[in-house]
Length: 79
Image (cartoon, rainbow, N blue to C red; front, side, top):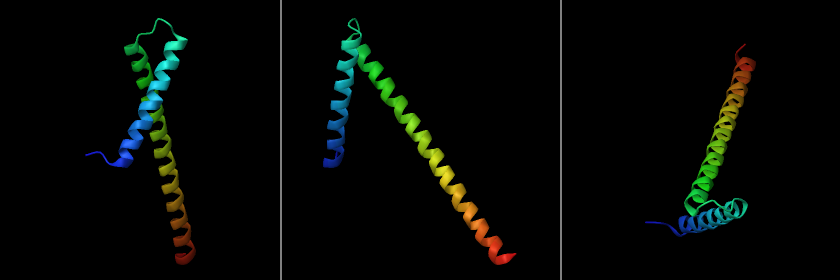
């Protein structure tokens, strides 16, 4: 089942997709609906992958910082 929150996100996604498809069809007059949808999907998924990598890098940097702080604290109290 889809929650109301998920439904809202799906509606927002559908609007974004429709808008991008129309943008590409205007820019490239000979682009079919199918091709415009494919290009739009490719671009959105590429952006998603970039964001995930950035988040993973940020999470990694955060963990390194936490470990560094723990190490500093250990050194101060035990050495």
